[in-house]
Amino acid sequence: MTATTMRIGLMADPGLPEKVAASVAADVSRELSDDPRAVGGAGVQWEVEVSAGALPLTLEGEIPLMERACEIRDGRGWDYVVYLTDLPRVHDGHSMLCEVSSAARAALVVLPALGAHRLRRRIRKLVVALIRSVQEGTMDFPSAPAAREAVGHGAVRRVPPGRDGDVSYVVLPGRWNRLRLLSGMVRSNRPGRLLSALSSCVAAAAATGAFGIFYASIWNMSDALSVPRMAAISGVVIAALSAWLIGYNGLWNSLRDAADRWRAGLDNAATIITVGLSVVLMYMILWLVLFVLGLAVITGDYLASQLGHPVTLFDYLHLSWLAASLGTLAGALGSNFDSDESIREATYNRRVHERRRLAADYQD
Image (tube, rainbow, N blue to C red; front, side):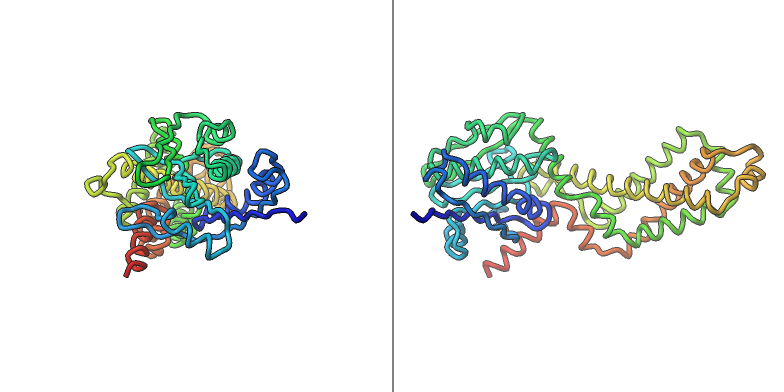
């Protein structure tokens, strides 16, 4: 007898969701195919197809997966569709994890709601639990043990369907879940990726920092500054460049224009952390490069003659520390020549804006 084949379309936003979907597709297929509890038994063969692409938001800021699920499934020959998005969603004032419909045979999963830790394992278990729930029509998610394991710690609540449909929502109430959502948002932003968009900023910082290595007055200044004062200077320049990047590129989300003030606050917090981590990473790399440059260019005897005392590696670290601070501050000038769009893509409020623009174009 020919085995029955069921096909799952695993749609994903470009970026981290697409990578996660590709990494779990084979495991989801194998786990469902080997599970005798699944409808049809172990004889059913499950195929998972990954498709990258972002659905446009409606003008109300919603992702219209359920309205378009039938069209998507029929057009691609899928039996079920699961959509992974990196945009945080809100339902009833709480962070939303899933949107599920048995009639549409579809589920939407908000990736950042799962946090930044063990993401692939959680997504695998979550997708399997959702497919089982949709297939059986029980909609017992998230009470099933596998679903609870996927969600992990924290409060979970299911919002049952209203009278006009069968769409259920799984929300994560509480402050702990908001913090987990924030960590997931930062991971989806991928702070390290921002460095490639700041090439002019990095170049200006490196040039200015190198000037400090060759300028004797900087040597004496670094020698005179205490470690606490140097740390304070580092904090100030990192904060200054971060604020400049956020303000100059229009990355701040106005709380007055947001329907959910805490959600707007999360957007801004994710932007601050993302940009701040990127600047800190740039600062540390610059410090290391200038430290190596200082060791290569300045001899110990000559530096000692300028400072008036024997020198150690700590003096080179101190010198490159101050030079890195000067270079980071000068990086703000170089950032004016970087691509605005590349920098803005690293924040959620800009991605939401682009998705809404796509929705308006689609309706027109």
